[in-house]
Every structure is written in structure tokens, then in C-alpha cells.
Length: 480
Ligand code: HEM
Ligand SMILES: *[C@@H]1O[C@H](CO)[C@@H](O)[C@H](O)[C@H]1NC(C)=O
Ligand SMILES: *[C@@H]1O[C@H](CO)[C@@H](O)[C@H](O)[C@H]1NC(C)=O
Ligand SMILES: *[C@@H]1O[C@H](CO)[C@@H](O)[C@H](O)[C@H]1NC(C)=O
Ligand SMILES: *[C@@H]1O[C@H](CO)[C@@H](O)[C@H](O)[C@H]1NC(C)=O
Image (cartoon, rainbow, N blue to C red; front, side, top):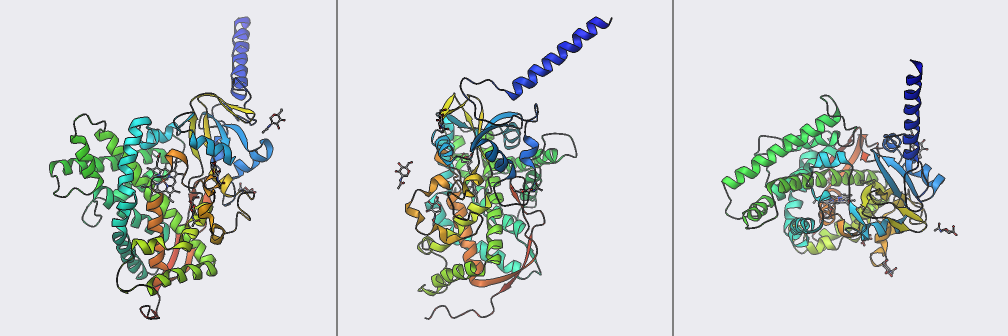
């Protein structure tokens, strides 16, 4: 009676031990980088997501780099991962997109963003979509949008200055969401009864959460938020198809034209997924960057002074004091661009960029096995004292004259290589135009919040509340 039990127990123990052994020592035809695979299944996921208030390199990364060096192995959300904090390896990974590496995000992301979003599409389909998106957010298109962006920024600022206090993270998010939604789907929040953005807010709360889909969990709310947003988008698309407009101008019109074409590879599902990703990618990231930018300005009067001077000079040098910002004026904002670069360097809004190795890859003395994920870690580069002197100091002037050097290898805020963020220019225009209106017409004082937390993505848990006041004495800027 006892013998069979003993045999079962020992078999069980042996298989568990082998399994744990295999987990800790993954197979590899070559030499894996050092590192620990953590607990079976869970890996080191919990350490990775542990919240911290520091703006420095995440503790997870820091500890392991110290122990194992700049390239190490780990396991996150059930996947073996090679972490790269080495800017040469990261550069190589970005350059090899589609050859040795391919875009890859954890399964929960794919589930949430839709199986056919830009991030998980490859090859031809990808190039085709990218072309569509670039035509929407490229220079020509942005030039045309400039007056509209300025108008919305002025309108919102005016509105906020009449309130006792304004929460900047949410308010800038709404400003940018409305602009993007208008561009993509001509969504007018004042006319539309349903609040599209609300669904995105529910969506974001659960984005980085444990993927347990039962009522009550953040993940469940996230999926529900996406479902509702997708339903609204689907209805809007259908409405538009039933009632085509005279002058096609937004992304919906573009999609409908494409869908009509013979032999098109675009489907309605792909178009809707893409729309969702674009709406999401645009307002959450840019509003974080803007909120942090204003926080930096509050903390550093000398930077605020210099920024204000640049923008007042633009007004002063204008022939017609009442004309709006021109593209030429936008292009002349040298210090503003340095300020924006410095803000996104320290913001580290995207703390990790994932790829998958398509075959065994030899790098320096290590092998990255086929099928493993590679995680490029922008904060480890942006906060590396060898790349940026006194990396935690906010100093826009460090970017002076950097236009001509090879800064891109050490600047990963917008990714790199073929999958470089398509919204970079859009973000810069929006930030620069908003800052222009803000510093020329308003002053502000901090009221509360403004503290940050990283999980490891940047968050403002208590928002950032300020009081905006119109500058009383508008100097006569038309005359010198
Ligand atoms: C401060 C603002 C922003 C930051 C920090 C940011 C960051 C990034 C990063 C790091 C990537 C690369 C992801 C990867 O390689 O896997 C990326 C890709 C992307 N971004 Fe942004 N982004 C910002 C604003 C925007 C805006 C405003 C849009 C909307 C137009 C946008 C749309 C996209 C899209 C569609 C991709 C995927 C591109 C591709 O896979 O080729 N982003 N972004
Ligand atoms: C946050 O990170 C810093 C350095 O990366 C570390 O010293 C500190 O202990 C961390 N705090 C928490 C609460 O983990
Ligand atoms: C690679 O290994 C060789 C011999 O073990 C060693 O001398 C060399 O420093 C290593 N190179 C790197 C980049 O680690
Ligand atoms: C900001 O960073 C980008 C990417 O490295 C670079 O191309 C650009 O010249 C920088 N801008 C300034 C003003 O330094
Ligand atoms: C910039 O980087 C490219 C690619 O790594 C390299 O070929 C080129 O020599 C670099 N230029 C400078 C000025 O460092």
C-alpha cells in the first residue's frame, strides 16, 4: 500500500525538481548572459513591477546590472527575457527589426490592444499601415494643423485660468485626446453625447495589471473599457459609411476609401484596432510629458525665464502681432526643443521596449536564443552617467549643438530603427505650441500633487494641481 505512494511521491518530486532545474537553467546553444530566472512561472515579474518614487534607473535594473553586468537574463510575465542596458546592443536590436528581431509585446498587451494592432503586425502589412499613419502625422499634415493646435491650446488655457485649480495631467490629456480624436475621426466632444475618453481612462488603469479577467479586477475593467471604446468606434465608422462626407479629410474617410478598393489588404477590424492604438498612444504619453514639463518649469525659474524669453521674442519679431504661430516660427524654437528633449529624457515614459529574437543571435560573448524576448531599457541609457553628465539633473542646455552629433544612439525615448515612434513630430508640435501659449500669457502656482511614482511606467498618483493666472501686464510686444 505504501510502496506505490512512495513511488508516486518520488516521481512527483523528481519531475518538480527537473522542471525547476530546467526553469532556472534554460537550454541554449551557446552562452546565455548571466542572471536569474526567478521563481517558476512567476519569474521576477513582481520585482519588475514594484512601484518606486525615484526618477533614477529602476531598482530592478540597477541591482541586476551591478550583479551581472549590462546584459542579463530574467523572466517576466511568463517569458524568458534578455535585458539590454547596453546602448550598442539596443541600437543593434532596433536596426535588425524584421531580420534578427521582431516587435513583440507580452500576451496581455496583445489581448488588450487587439491582435492586429500596429505593434504586432509585420512586413508588408506593417509598411502599408505606417504609410497611412505617417501621411496623417507627417510634416505636411502637421503644418496644416498648427493653427488648430494653437487655437485649442489657447481656448483650454483660457478656460483653466478661470478655475480655482486645474489638474494638469487629466486636463492636458483631454486637450490632446480631443485634438487627436478630431484628426482621426472628427470626433467633437461637445456635440457627441457619449464620452469616448472615459472608456480609455478605464482602459489605462488596468493596462499594467495582473491578467485575471474576473469582475472587479483592474484587468477586467480594462478589457471592458476597450470593448466599449471599440464599440463606439465601430458605430462611428458604420455611421460614416452610411453617410459619406463631401470632403474626405480625416482618418475615417481615408479608411473607408481604402476599404472600397479592389484587393485591399485592409479590413475593418485592422482599421479599428489601429484607431484605438493611435488614440491611446497619443494622449497618454504626451500628457505625461507636458505635465512633467510644467513641473520642471515650476522647479527651475531660470529655465522658465529662458523659455519665456524665446517665446516672447517670437511675438516681438512678428510683423502682424495678431497672426497665429507660423511653421517658420515653430521651427525657430531652439531652446524649446532642447527643453522637450530633456523632459522626455528624464520622463522615461516608455520604460521598456520589447522585441523577440527570430533566431539564435551572437552578441559579444553571449547568445540570445531564438524565441527569447529582448527588453531594451531606455532609462538605463538616459540615466547613465557615462552618456549624460549628472544624469538626474534637469538641464536643457546639455542638448546645445547636439543636432549634429550621434545623439540618437543614446536617446531612446521614442524608440529607434524602423519602428521609431510615428508620433514624435506630432508630440513635439503639441508640446511646443502649448508651452508657447502658456509661458507668454500665463503664470501659475503649484497647489498640490505633482509627486510621481513608477510602476515602472510614469504616473502622477495625486495628479498635479496648479492655479493659472493671466499675466497682468501684457507688454506691448508689437513695438521694440
Ligand atoms: C511623449 C510622447 C511619446 C512617447 C514617449 C512615445 C514613445 C514611443 C516609443 C518608445 C515607441 C517604440 C515602441 C517600439 O519600438 O516597440 C513608440 C511607437 C509608436 N508610437 Fe509613440 N510615443 C509618443 C507619442 C506618440 C503619439 C502622439 C502617437 C500618435 C500619433 C504615437 C504613436 C505611436 C505608434 C503608432 C507607434 C508604433 C510605431 C511602430 O511600431 O512602428 N506616439 N512610441
Ligand atoms: C527605490 O529605488 C531606490 C534606488 O533605485 C532604492 O534605493 C529604494 O530603496 C527604492 N525604494 C523602494 C520603496 O523600493
Ligand atoms: C569575451 O570572452 C573573452 C575570453 O573569455 C574575454 O577575454 C573577453 O573580455 C570577453 N569579452 C566581453 C565583451 O565580455
Ligand atoms: C533631440 O533629440 C533628437 C534625437 O537624438 C535629436 O535628433 C535632436 O537633434 C535633439 N534636439 C535638440 C534640440 O538637441
Ligand atoms: C554615427 O553613427 C553611425 C552608425 O553607427 C556611424 O557610422 C557614424 O560614423 C557616426 N557618426 C559620428 C559623427 O559619430
